Length: 200
Figure 1 (cartoon, rainbow, N blue to C red):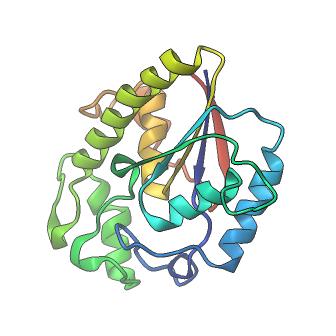
Figure 2: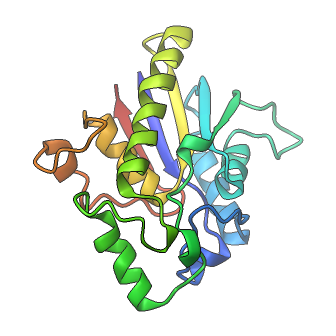
């Protein structure tokens, strides 16, 4: 099975470097153009099903990619919106762009041993758990329904893409700090509407 994973198009908060967690922001004009460019890039790929985060910025990106917003197009495939693909929740620090908070998020808050819930942030192990649950529940269903040669598109968020990469590479539900999957994910970054392909 072919698995295509992309991050949503740009939002104003991305541009302002604000934490965006579960805030339900739309994509901006640049984000729409990024999604249109990606749609053109993948137009010759037969996609059987798309799974998207239920947050607006990802949902809008998925709809553009698959022709739901273009009256001249027949939508390419169904979209399933799944809360497990949402970005990590940032609690009371959502929307902030304070450098000290940013440093906490990108360093301390990803520490698996600390598994902190400081500021009401979603503990990192909870993010790993729900992404693991999504992958090991939905991808086998898609394979059974559409076959081994199917192509699945996943539209999600920066942090969720990073954890999904770990899971696709064989990471366990409870992350092992010494695993090759985790090591391969430490510096994994997808920018807005970048896409990565896996064979699973």
